[in-house]
Length: 131
Image 1 (cartoon, rainbow, N blue to C red):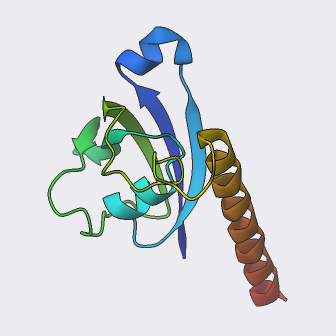
Image 2 (cartoon, one colour):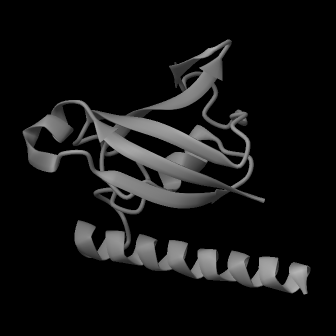
C-alpha cells in the first residue's frame, strides 16, 4: 500500500517568490517523517505538518518526535513543509548537498525519475491484481 502525499511549501521561502509550491508523491506505507524526508525534493531541513480531522474541525498536526514512528493518515496525506534551515547538511534527501548527483537539479531529476518508476510499478501491480 502507498500513501499519496500532497506537500505545500510554507513559510518564508514560499513568501520570497516560491509561491505555493506543491509537491505530489507516493510513499510506501506506513508514512513516517524519515520516509517523507527521503522523497521530498528540496534541500534543507524541514518541519512537516499533517492536516487531520479533530472532532468536527480540520487542524494542522505537527509531525515531531520519533521520525520512524508511523503516521496514521489512511491512504492520503495533505502536508505543509516549513523550511527550518536551508543549509542543513545533515539532511539526506535527493537534493542534499552531499547527494550523489552533481547538482541539485540533477538530484531532483533523479528523484523524480525514481518516483515515476515506482508509481509505474505500483500501477502495474494494481492492474495485475484487478485482472
